[in-house]
Length: 560
Image (cartoon, rainbow, N blue to C red; front, side):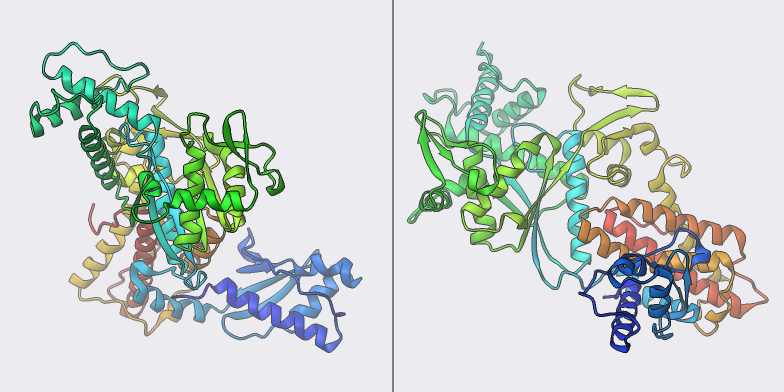
């Protein structure tokens, strides 16, 4: 794993600050967080630190004097070549060019694993995402949650966390009973019976498809049943829906490590169920009250402003009760250090009470993080798309992937931060034109790298690290900087839970390579040393592009 260059710079700045205090140039002060950032203008160096501005009032000195005291004590050793002070008190750091060029070899050796950092130290994180009710096919909005969750899990894994991807199957409760009754009605209709759908039943054409499949598999075995619906018919229908969900997610290249069934939380077998244990925890902690014939979660001491029903007056647990048991299982049984739930924005009202419940059952409510994502609006150019052309219903995730492909679907879904609404342009996503489709633009840059390397090999020229000092052109320096930026970006995305920055980085890197390719001849037959150096840079660019695309979940083709 690489260590982010920013961390190396930060360590040297921290050492200089402590040395200035030890020398008496600065008075002793409590430790302060250092912010090492990339300046907007390249002439200000590779990194900048504003610690002097933040310390000035505490040490009662002008910011420029504080900055000078620290800058004088920063060791000019790898990776730092130069340090200067700029008004009103910034410390600007320029990296050693030779050190950066030599690091290209590390990038090439890492290949598509470039960018991995040791930030998580094996900290166990569960990312639960999608978790749509298995009563219907996945919709486009589910696809956004799928890509966000999957990309976040990939980023956390690259940052050194031990990550588990989980899908929670809501296979208990009223909606499952309604699904079974609807399916039984559709099944009977397959044999010519005039059976009405239950009130509020699932109207989608997919229910007819499932009923047809049951008829094909089992014939009329359920027609004489006295149950409405027959339990094994409901269970088989549920299995078919889960299989469809798995298949749809596989089209999007999303796979889960674990599928957790809600019904398992109530299965006690020869011992208490997870649900019983969790409810017992709440009762023993005096977090349960009974009123209006129902059982309520009393959470005012935990920061939640209202009580929430756990068990209805009918005796049936609520969805919230299942969530309490589920999160007890996550934190207390499976002992994840951090749990990240990726939910649609319409679940915002559930966040506080779920955190409170985690604390009430003995977990750490702050270790539960909820990433909320906004809606997706489809359009085709300027035209809004609301309905499926095939069925006249809501567009499914499968239809989206079949129209634009998994690569474009994943890239486009990740282009905006989770808290921003998204307009997904089907026309642009389906286009192979790199000028319209950013996914194609990045993939084309990777394929161009491969093409350059193939053509060079055919011409008898190979990458060489013997003369990397020849990489001094501006376009070369910019490209090297972009390549080396990925490890710190991975660290930032993991810390902030913001995987969408991957798409910006991939486009920026592709642009830097394209500018390098357009401005300079990479293969110069009469200059084998320069050609070798530029081919090495091309190899490193290809590795970094592959690493970024891998994290996004997009193919990195060698030909297009």
